[in-house]
Image (spheres, rainbow, N blue to C red):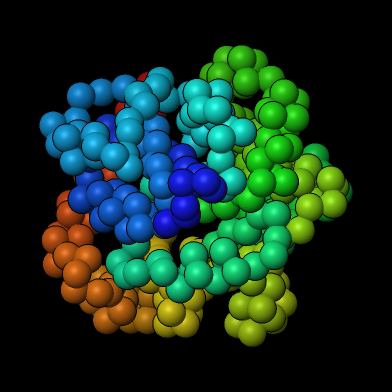
Length: 295
């Protein structure tokens, strides 16, 4: 944790339809509190029954309407804080499940003489991209230092957020957020000559396992990154109905968490909850399919 003279804040974006904060999110937040002076949990408006677990310092909670995906939550939180008070601001969302200490990551990142750093990058070019260079941060875990923080207001002013939240087409909205936030924000910082570093270099993994073909390492090669010491898996891998995730022994999420997880993270409780979340999300998807067919 940083000294009082150099405050740090983690803006943590969380969305959930249930009336509680999931255990896997609480585990993630309790790990993050080791590395930040403040953690602002931005979550969709509701009344979680276990909210008391994150109401005391270093935590604070900011309820917002669910608009503009995680970018919408980050945008609203950024408008709420006095950004000039901080030497470090992190944007992290709940799309990852963490089952081990992240101390190695923060020790690595905070020793890098760079303006911003993150967990994993991407060389994939979205088919709808408006950018020439599509190298980008995966926006679920970004840490900005002072120089990058100074440019945040400039970038935010360029984003017409009021127009963004008026978009009703969910598919188009998601594409626009990826184009403007993930790719756009990365390219904005790089064009302003800021220095950066990624912990998981997706190109190295693509070269090693995919003959150089750019892939999303977090969903295609996660079993390698976990084996290499990163105790993080995307929730979408767990809730996926892709048979490749379910049938490959090396890619079985339960086996990976049991093998590489730390007991202090409540591994059995973590797996139990994730199985229930997976079951409920698959049910919801099936229900949506039948509703579409019924129209």
